[in-house]
Length: 119
Image 1 (cartoon, helix red, strand yellow):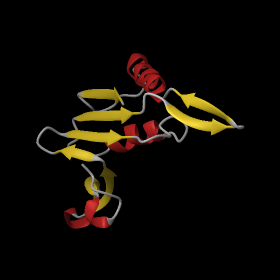
Image 2 (cartoon, helix red, strand yellow):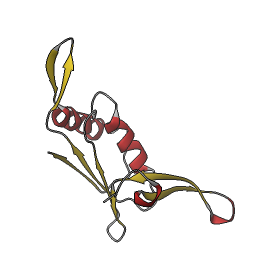
Image 3 (cartoon, helix red, strand yellow):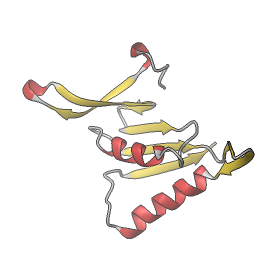
């Protein structure tokens, strides 16, 4: 797992190669199992509101040798809105999004499987 946001704690994976085989674009991930090709992304909030689920789906699908995605979102994200507490159902939202993507067949993700888990 990623040890932090500082340079030594990041887990970077290649996305695009440039001249002489050098990495031209690479993305940070929360965890990666290179042998199995599993990318792990865990959202600590804002999964729905910040479009983090969309970002994770697209960015993870561009990572070289990514075969599977394990995506973790909060079951419920509590926030204040106009002085009252609101709960965003990030897991339910993310599940509906993945269902729509796979059911429509219009957007084909390159993964052999996607695991969505709530915490």
